[in-house]
Length: 73
Image 1: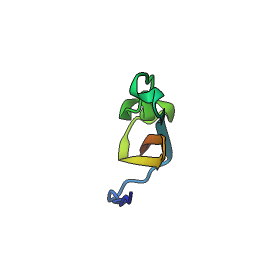
Image 2: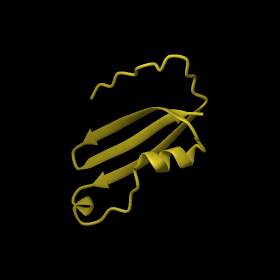
Image 3: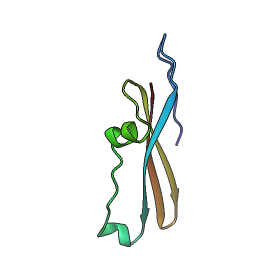
């Protein structure tokens, strides 16, 4: 996957928060306790003002990792 980072004019980020989940086949078909929301990523880095939000994904046979990345102040 390819992501493009678009700058927000006049906004500098000082913090980065991540919320990630790992899925292992076939267990993830029946069970997942992951919270990959913007709010969780924001809370993990103590961000009050969000500037950018990105999704990141890693995939391999039988495995998948998804992260929500939030940058802000």
